[in-house]
Length: 75
Image (cartoon, rainbow, N blue to C red; front, side, top):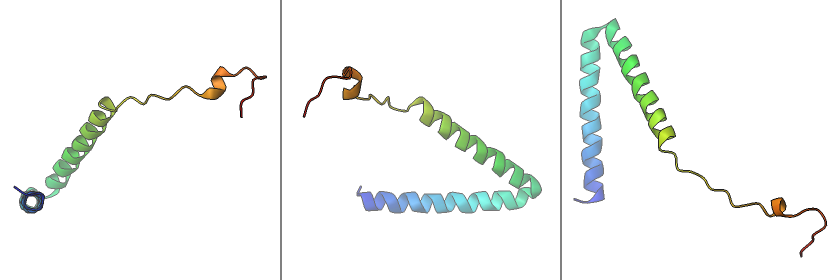
């Protein structure tokens, strides 16, 4: 399957899910907004925690200035 086809299918799926969620929220009334907010906040929190746990380690190269003691000089 090509990348374009996958993108079209994913976009269509997102649209269908968004329409379904909209219909569901309309039926729930005020509680729908509360449910949506709780689910969205949970999803965002989960994504932030997951990103923080899987953050790649950054290795800094040893700085040249740390090895010099004041009187050394190199061009």
